[in-house]
Length: 139
Image (cartoon, rainbow, N blue to C red):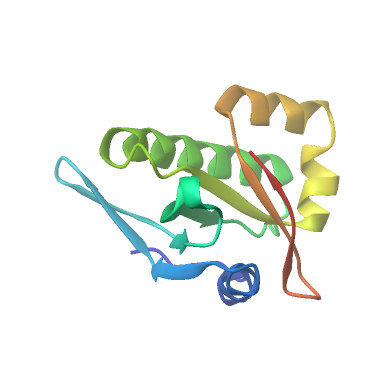
């Protein structure tokens, strides 16, 4: 199992403030002889009567290295792999990439970020580092 992201605890708090219950920390996946761990599994029972027991997976990325492109490559590849395995094993559980607001502004709100997001169909969960809150969900 890999090390937790710098913002792991912050994202847990933000999800809980938003009405989510953390069910898996981490969310364990197995494919063939490989074990994989998505950062979080969460469930929200209050989304609506037609969507009771709504579950999601959340992969958290800080985007703090000296190379934003390397961060983007790593995050997109990991996200795509987890998304595909979840589609096969838990098709009702969408995955979100949790990123700080500054990463969204600096990396995803430009041509390059839009290309990566569109290419990998990345759903985003944008959080505020200071307030420990979720700012926006972008499916």
